[in-house]
Image (cartoon, rainbow, N blue to C red; front, side, top):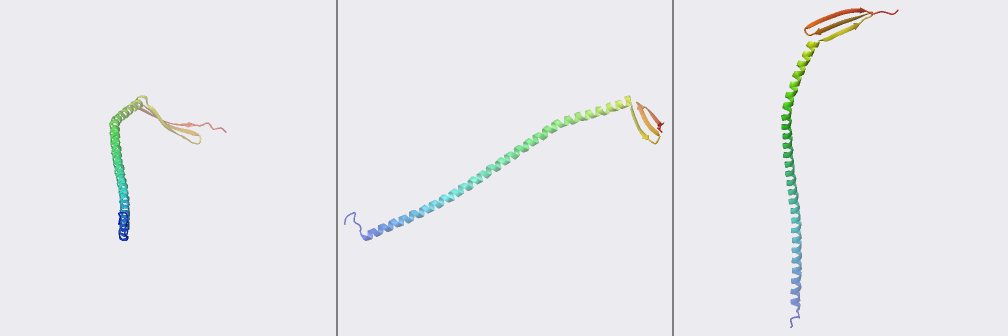
Length: 145
C-alpha cells in the first residue's frame, strides 16, 4: 500500500475528523458571533451611559454658571440700588421743602361754586404765607324774559 492509497477505515476516520472539525468550527463561529453581539451591546450601553454622564455634567456646569451670573447681577443691582435710593430720598426731601416754601411764599387760591336758579354762590379761600382770607358771595344772575 502506497501513501496515496486509503482504506475504507482510513477514509471513514478522515471524513469523521473533517465533519467534527467543521462542527467545531461552526460552533466556535457561532460562539464568536454571540460574543461579538454581546460586546457591541455592552459598548452601546457604555456609550449611552457616558453620554448621559457628560450631559449631566454639562447641565450641572450650566446651572452653576447661571447661579453665579444671577448672584453677580443681584449684587450689582444692590450696589447700584442703594445709592440710587439715597439719591431718590434726597430728591424727595428737597421737593417737599421746595413745595412747602412755594406754597407759603406765593400762596394759593382754593374755592368752590354752586349755581342755583338765579344766583351764583362762590366760596373762595385765599392763602398768602401765614395770612388767609375767606370770601363768600352770592351774585344774582340777569334773567332774560
